[in-house]
Image (cartoon, rainbow, N blue to C red; front, side, top):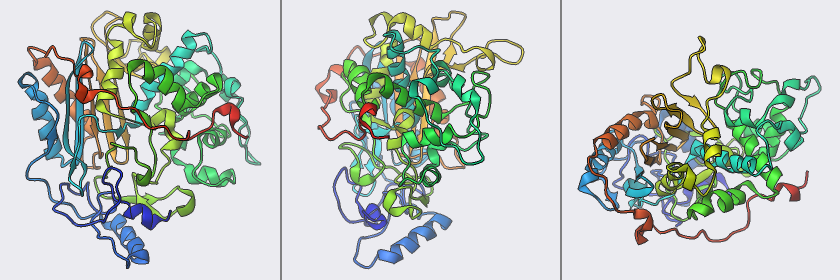
Length: 493
């Protein structure tokens, strides 16, 4: 499919149609070369459209008018009106196309609502169970899968990832293998202490074209290609010596899961992490809009920016940034899942009562939340940090009790911003946006988090209902389709 066909695929929840300038409901973040574009399809677009797209990259996309009335979906409850107020105001003030918020209390889903549009052009509102790309919210899910294997003695936290995966690094003629790579452990990967620092070296998850060309393979680079390439480079610091957030750490963990289980990462997680919770719609997302899942939203950027495509047939061609500037499939275990806010709070609520969790034993959950050693968990004077990264979660201890912790994780990709939180008092929420903040705005997760804490603290009486049991939010089975990746044991080297 050509770049023009990608750009002309309408975003209307799986339908094709014309691009038209409509009354619109976005701002500078919903126009131009995003899936919410402003151009009517015709037979005379060809080269002219490519030129136009490139022009928009430089000057930004034309904004679309804000809606007179913000669409809101889902049942309301006056006891939780504060969430309605905060979300509506947040979406309007920042001119966000759409958002969804789900809140649980003591394992019960008490709030699930959508705000704004899943598809701006076709005026399709966001439903409470709409699917969004969740970016790095994928990491807590990957971490649970790894901890299950540890619990089953199929994997040890002290195991060395190079030995587990038997990595064959790609070394250039002048490169020498960094022997420190042999020492990176599973625990260090879980806690972002593997030795890779994206502040010092480019994040390899976003070097698809360079890696594919270096390995003489067609783009986009797959996870195994990224691993071979990166293991041929030097680490940024000694493994375990400090914390540095790394998408690559969790890319490796996805391959560890595949190696140990002989299954694909996606299928293993669906069967053993999501399935026991009754979550049936979560899946690894697709890069192209033409392959969007049923019920998935459209994605928009704050300035309608384009970038160079990493896709095989259109390498280097300008594409909307959420749709081809990186490969979502290659990011499966570090940022590739799509989910609803309802799915995510169902997952987070398993941390309410560890003794009753169908996923992990209480001692394993405690291990996942433990404070890392050294500079990752303690400051320069040796005092415990107020917060730290455990195994898949940012952890903030509450008081002096090691058993009381607040857990959270944020996620961001072009066209996506997400936040998942689980508090020590049994309140959990997930908030998802189908755009990200502009360079002039505070990241949405950081801006919305204190507001949601404030609202939750002000609730005097939580509803006793459980929307998890409601027919309106009952799981919908994902239609069967061919697996996207073969199990590791069945792939050709």
